[in-house]
Image (cartoon, rainbow, N blue to C red; front, top):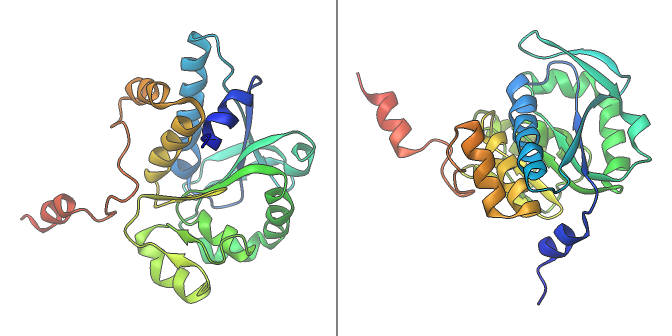
Length: 230
C-alpha cells in the first residue's frame, strides 16, 4: 500500500507554505523554535537542489504583535494568505492561555475556515487550546504542556489528552507538549515531508538531539531525579 506521506512528498515540486499563527501574549520559543527548524530545513534542501519552505508569521490584523516575553514580532494579515496553498498551519501556545483565548476569540473562527484549506494543522504547547476551542480536536488524542493538562481536560472533555507525549500525530492534526517540544514536532514534520536524512541534517545544524520519541514522558525520570537532587 502506498505511503501517503511519500506521495505527498513527491507532489511537492514547489516550496511548501507554512503559516505561523500569531496573537498577543504567545510564547516566543513556541513560535521561533519551530520556525528555526523549517528555516534550517530549507537551507539543507537548497543544498540538495530541492524546494524548501516559505514561512509566514501572520495575525488577524497584521502588524506588530507582542509576545508573552515582551518581544514584538512583525506579522502579515492572516486573511491575505488564505488564497494561497497552505501546507501547514502552526499555532503556538501562550503562558497566559485563558486570557489569550478571550482576547483572540475571532482567531478561533479563522482557524475553522483555514483548517479546511490547510493540508495539516498543528499546535505547539497550549496552542492546542485554540484548536480545541475551534472544535478541531474532538475525538482526537492530543498533547499540550503538562502544567496545563488539568485545565485542558476541564475545558475540553471530548478531547483525549495524552499527558505524557512529547507530540502526537492524528493526521491531519499534530500537537506537541510545551515550549521546546515544538522543535521535536517540527523535526518530525520535516522528516514526514523530506525523509529522515534531511531531518538529521537539520538537527545537526541546530546542534540539538535528533528528536525525542513522540511517546517520551514530558517529566522524564532523569529530570525528576535531577529535580530531587540537593
